Image 1 (cartoon, rainbow, N blue to C red):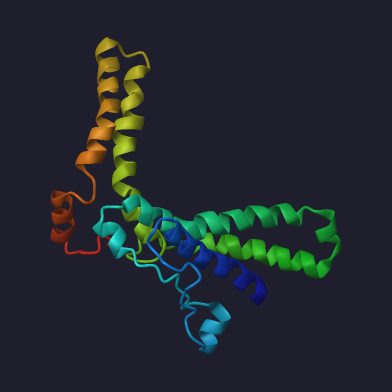
Image 2: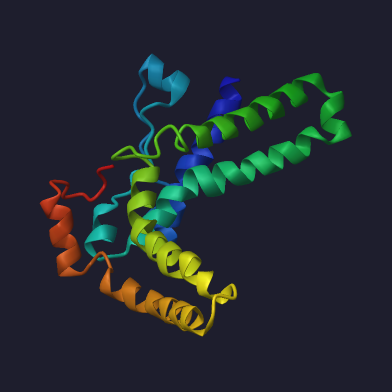
Length: 202
């Protein structure tokens, strides 16, 4: 079980690190903080950290980059390893070997647990993987949902005026994304006025 835990957590942290490296926000993707040699950390890896600084991303208004780095661990790494281990659990060669089957089973379990640990448990936490993801995409997602999804109602046979307003709503999406870009002075002012200079408060 401990081996399965390590096998799920280490790729999780390195996924953050390599994503930050790929996006130009980290010089060495192999450098992470392992959290020390305390018994608690050696068993649980509770203090391990990807050692990625999200502040420069938000300072440049690059919220999507912060969101991608944040979701790379639970979404990309654990999600991919969950699907891979689920596939392996169905293989006859794995099922015939009791030790191998138990190892893959607990590996599958640990990847589900790593995702659950953030979604929904820490969805509204002010730090951790979902904090940067939430802040990085919340404005973009809100605009797309409001002007995109709900703006489509006019195409459902409610007459020419509604159809025209739906077209206008879709056209407003790129304009609103530019106006509400996190790097805009008025957006930064709103974040500072909220008493949360990091912009990560739930």
